[in-house]
Length: 338
Ligand SMILES: Cc1cn([C@H]2C[C@H](O)[C@@H](COP(=O)(O)OP(=O)(O)O[C@H]3O[C@H](C)C(=O)[C@H](O)[C@H]3O)O2)c(=O)[nH]c1=O
Image (cartoon, rainbow, N blue to C red; front, top):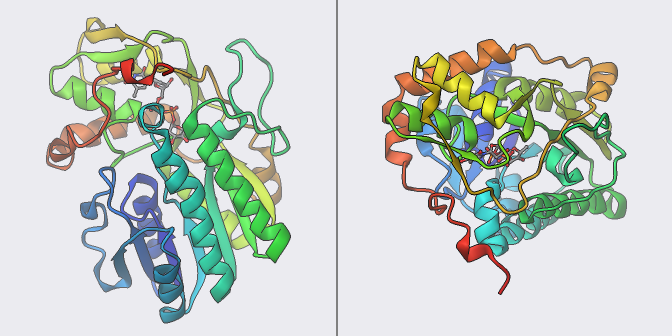
């Protein structure tokens, strides 16, 4: 029996990964660490029984992490913990650098002190900055980091710290940079659950003024399978991109949600753009396919349909979360230069 430490385990992707891991490795124990910020919910880990040991705490709390690693003889660590919402980062950047950069460094330090077989870090396509809407370019694993927003920059900083721990201390790390995730249990601040829950509530869908801006979409379960693949087969010190090549603009997403719910497209409302709103990201994910044999399996159309239906069927999950996000209605007035 082995144990794996999953950080950010009560969040959207982290909790899906915990379930995924337990399905695949029924004899393993998962140590689930989460700070339970506004975006984490213990209900995401319900019904998992005693194979999950939940601990509320911060990844930057070195003493706590050292104790957990030693006590549970943990071999693998997967770091999903992060402040992840671009809109909040615009309004409160310091929170992102503390959690994402310093938090990750504390976690790495604990892993270095105790020694782990593998440290896997979850990163994002956003570290490379953005692409023009009509560009033929894609981001490869060797593209330069050009973050444009406080969230991007905090994730870029975290990636650099992870690499530094590999180069300097020989910690066996891997990193995945992933496209935009969607699926059940995503906090209703991100665009797909936000649009869906607004529509279900009979409210307007706030489409940022740059509504043609596009994102590459991946179902969260495909992402979890990719993380498992890299954790088990990836080469220490290496980076792997995780994407599908499937793009949709914000405007198209709003239409998909409204069409699925049988609601009029007139429910879309143009709101002020988020400062630093990246236009587009697109990853070259050929390396993980070629070298490790991972492929995404869930088609976008079916995944979106199932996701919208999940929110329609699980009001009791998302209703208590409405109003918990510190971001208030696309009011960027606090974000001007002072
Ligand atoms: C919340 C919101 C968003 N949008 C637009 C802005 C973007 O063009 C798109 C997606 O925005 P969202 O905030 O959901 O996600 P991104 O800023 O693309 O970032 C997300 O995907 C990456 C990979 C991560 O790494 C982030 O953690 C994750 O939050 O919808 C609107 O038009 N209206 C809204 O109210």
